[in-house]
Length: 393
Ligand code: SDX
Image (spheres, rainbow, N blue to C red):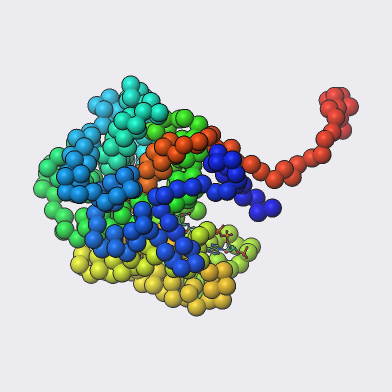
C-alpha cells in the first residue's frame, strides 16, 4: 500500500531487477561500480575508464583503453543535419528539453544499425551515445545563448573536448585552469551509475520492449529531469539563492519540517541511502578544494554549510535519516566551474549515459529477459453496470 509497484524483470518473480553493474548499501553508505569502491575510482580513475568498466565489467588494459578512447573520439560529431534540428527549438528552451529531443532523434539519423539483438549494433550505439552526449549537450547550451556551435576537437581528451565545445569563442583562446577539467571528470565518475534509480529503471523498462537505444536513453533523460531526481542539483542552487544568507537557514529548516509548506530541502534525503551518500562526502571535499584553487568565494557555499550543519543536528532530519545527497554540493561546484544553472542536470545526463547504456546492454544480454510489466494495487471502484446518460444524475 506504499503506492510503489514492483518491477517484474521477467525472471518469473516479482523480485527486483538483477544486475552486476553497481552495488549500493544504503545503511553503510557503500557504492561500488563492478566491485570497485567509488572512493578508489574517484581517486585513481577517469570518467572514460569508468565508462569502459561499466560497459565491459573489467578495467581496461592500456591497449583496450586506447581502442575505446579512439572509438569514442571518432564518434563525437553530430550528423550535420542534426545541427539544423536545433533551429526548431525556441532559443530559450530548457537544455534538458533540447537534449531529450535531440537524443531521441539519433534514431532518425542512425536507423540503419538499430538491431537491438545484434551485439555489434548495441556496442556501436553505446560508443555513439557516450561520444555524442557532450557534443549535443554543448550545442544545447550554445544554441540557448545564441553562440555558434563548436565541432569536437579530436586532439583533446573527453572532458577538455566538452569544455572547448561549451566555452570556446573565436575572439580569444580558451583558457581553463586544469582543476576545471579534473573536477568535471570526477563529477562525471560520481554520477556515472547508481543501480536502479528512477531514470535507469526507466531506461531498462523502455529497453525491455525492444525500443532502440536512443529512444531508451531519451526516456532516461526525461526521467532524470524531475527535481526529485537529477533536477535536484538545479533545484538546490535555486533553494540556496532563495534562502540567500546563512542567517535565514533556520527559517528554511523550519519550513522544510512544516507539512503545510511544500518547501523541501533539495539535495537532502535519498530513497536508498539512510546514511551519508558516499558521493556527497567526496564532492563536499572537492567543493572546498575547487573553490580555493579557483579563488572563488561563493556566499552560497556558506549557506550550504550552515544548512548542512543545521539539518544534521535537527531531530526531524536525524529521525528520517535525511543526509545531504550527491546533488547537494555538485551545483555549487558546477557554478564555480562556470556551468550555467540550467545546464546542471544536463551534466548529470552526460555522466549517467554510461550507466544507462550499460544497463540497457546488460538487460539485452541477460538470458530470459522479458518485457517489464510493473503491477499495481487496485484501489478503484467495485464492479458496476453502465447507466445511460439520460438516466445519470
Ligand atoms: C538523486 O535513486 C537514486 O539513486 C537517485 C540518485 C542517483 O544517483 O540516481 O541518487 C540521484 O536523485 C538524489 C536525490 C535528489 N533529490 C533531492 O534532493 C530532492 C529532495 N529529496 C526528496 O525529494 C526525497 O528525499 C527523495 C525523493 C530523494 C527521497 O524520497 P523518499 O525516500 O521517498 O522520501 P519520502 O518522500 O518517503 O520522505 C520520507 C520522510 C517524509 O516525511 P514523513 O512523511 O515521514 O513525515 O522524509 C521527509 C518526507 O516529508 N523528507 C524530506 C525531504 N526528503 C524526505 N523533508 C524535507 N526535505 C527533504 N529533502
